[in-house]
Amino acid sequence: MEQRRTVADLSPLERAAVADFQRRVGQAFPGVTACYTVFGSRARGMADPESDLDVCLELDVDRLSFANKQKLRRIAGQVSLAHDLLLSVLIVDLALAKEREDFAIVTTIREEGIPL
Image (cartoon, rainbow, N blue to C red):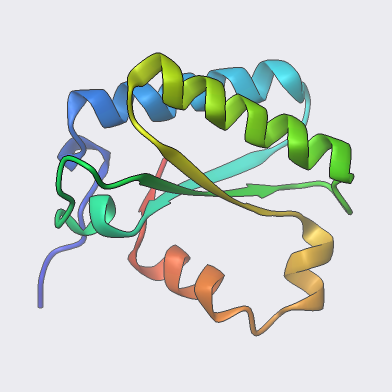
């Protein structure tokens, strides 16, 4: 069985991009607890130079408004441009997690992704 990768296995560019994303989200949503997990080809170490950086963002809020989801996507876009690396974000609030307790992708991300 292959050993689970960690943040140290990400490239300096990937680490810088996720750190910038975490910082910007923290500034935009102060006091909101967030859990970040890198998943997909970059988490598996199978990415090519054109691969996006997939990040699951779990927020400890009941239900995130559409406007706030747009705000998070804009932040991801800004980070993508700043680091020349496409950041794709899966946003999960408590309502979505509860509605879809069997949301297999989130379970798989938690099990196989790289927690930040």
